[in-house]
Image: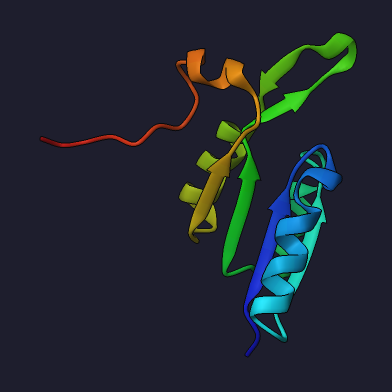
Length: 105
C-alpha cells in the first residue's frame, strides 16, 4: 500500500519541490496538491496518511489570513492523521490562532 501525502497550499509552486522530493525519496508515494477550497473534498477522497498544510492564505490585496488552523482542527476531529503545519509568512508568528508547539511542563 503506497504512502499518501496531501499538500494543501494556496500557491502550489511553494510545495512543488517538497512534493517532488517525497516522490523521489519514497518511490510509489501518491501525492496531490490542492488549495484551501479544495481541501475538504480531497481529504475525504484521498484518505491520506499525512497532510502538509500551509497555515496562511494570501487573499486579494496581499492580505494574509490564517486558513490552515480551521482545516487542521477539522482533520484532528474528523480525519485523524499526522499534520505538518508550515508557513512562509512572518505574520503567522503574531497570530494567536496559529498552531504552536505546547509544553505540558
